[in-house]
Every structure is written in C-alpha cells, then in structure tokens.
Length: 358
Image 1 (cartoon, rainbow, N blue to C red):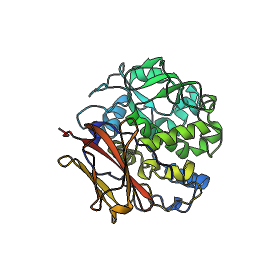
Image 2 (spheres, helix red, strand yellow):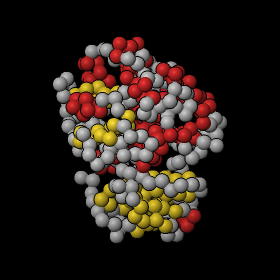
Image 3 (cartoon, rainbow, N blue to C red):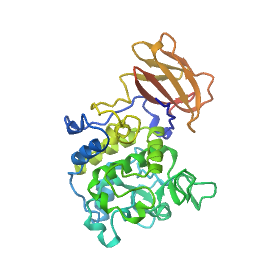
Image 4 (cartoon, one colour):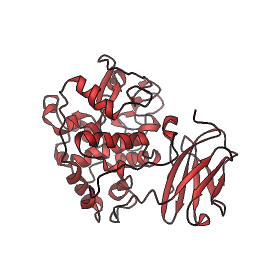
C-alpha cells in the first residue's frame, strides 16, 4: 500500500488525543455493505438522499441563530469561519455570508437555485467571510500557484498549479482541505440524480456528466490527496452530528473515511465490509513528559510508524520498541501526526510535541 502523508488540523482541534468517531444510527449504512465502486456510491446515494429539505430563502435569523449556532459555533464563542481568521459572534450581513462549499451554479442557474434541494443542504453550507466568499466565486478547488490574485492568509485564489487543470482555482487552508474534499464527495453522492445536469461551470473543471466516477481524473487525485492528508477532525464529526439532528442525513465520508478508497481510491477492487478499515483497533498516545509515543497494539514489533510534520514531510519512521514506545525527543517543538500501520490497518493520531495545551 502507498504510504500516505498526513497534514494537521489546527491546534485548537488537538485538545483530545482520541480520534472520536461519528455516531450514525444502527443499521444506517447496512444497504451499502458488500458493494464497491459505482454500486457503493449509488447505495450511499439512496441512503443519504432522503432528508429534511431546508429552505435557503428562510430568514437569516433561522440560519445564523438556529442552524449555524448548532453546526458551526466555535467553543470559544464565535462562528467557525474556514475562510478567514475573523471571529464574529453575531451575524453582520455586510461582513458574513452563507457559503456553498460546492458552488450552486454548478447545478442550476440563478433563477433555479431555490427550486433545487441542494440549495439548502447544510452539509454544503458554512459561515464565511464575505470578501473571501466573493473572491472564491464559483471556481474549482485546486492548488494556487506562485502569484495568487487573492490571499487573506487562510484561503487563496489564482491560477492552478496542480497537474491536470490550468484554470483559476480556490485553495483552502491545509487544515480544512479534507473538510472541503469530503463535502464535495458528499455532494456528488447525495445528488447523484443531478449527474446529467451538472452545468458547464463545474463540467469544465472538476465534474463529468455521469454518476460514476463523476469527478475528472485531476479532481479525483486532488480530493483523495486532501482527504488522506487532512484526516477527519472533531470539528467535522461534531458538525456531521449537528447537521444530522437538523436535516436527518449524514456525510458518509466523515463517518467512514475509508469509503472514498472503495469508490475512487486504493480499494476499488474490494467490497466494503462495513468497517472503518483505515482506523484499526488500536490507538496512539503521546506523553509530553517522557516525549514518547505509546503505540497500543497486540504486538508492537509487528507495527510500523511514520511521523510527519505540518507540511506533510516524513521525519521519522521505523518500528516501536517491544513495549510500544517511540522516542520523539529529537523533534523540534510543534505539531505532528503519527501514522501507525499494523495488521493491514492504519491509524493517524495528531500530537503537540514539547508544549502544553494551555
């Protein structure tokens, strides 16, 4: 299996060492078990497509004071904005927008927005800085080259530097790239019935007018890279649960990140067994006092580990000692992720080395 580099989420999301799994209701994904590739995507579509349809044109008070207060309220008391560093605790229409992560112009013209179910889907709507939202426009996701036309320190807009697409793209911060990737995966799965209706704006960049694979080759490579490099965070898990409470459906790529591998990635030739194969049944714990990682697996000598820095570069690799310990004392202070492989499974754990969480 290809060793995949992992990038971190923000320090705020590193309060807990435990990877918290989302909680779908028992049996929610049963009809997807045993399927792969196109059939798996369609099975997931049939599971998540039925949901409560929210009216995007409802009052701003409902969206900001009811919905976003449940889905995107930061623990420190402000709306969580993935588009800027602003920390706004009250809605200001001139400074804040409800942003469609996947642009709604990709499935309808402006006169048809309100006629489409996807227009009010909370999984695809987030609080955003108004200027960043305007600059994002309806551009494809991508990696911006050396001369961005917009850069607020969090998001960038400019000419693509990612192989396979040369147009203008929007690039989120590293800590949210996985969030955007999983949102796009959800949208093309939930709204698989839109397949023949994707508009020219999306089709000229990331999409094709088909149910599978739907993403163009460059988009698959980009989204899978972001999905792997930025693992599901507690923010996403909490948001997925909150959205489910409101509109009664879930993002399967948050509940089971490995599903993306069975549909577009490394496990396409295998049928999904209903488990989160990527996570394994083990954990990794960092001890700041001893400056060691503890790998909890039945036989540590059968495990392998890799430690990456915040840019996704490999810094350490090898095997734990017989007691499951990995000495990381030589690393500079900072944020890292340890990826452990054992028994054909893997587990990624973020840790803050040499510093406290205060």
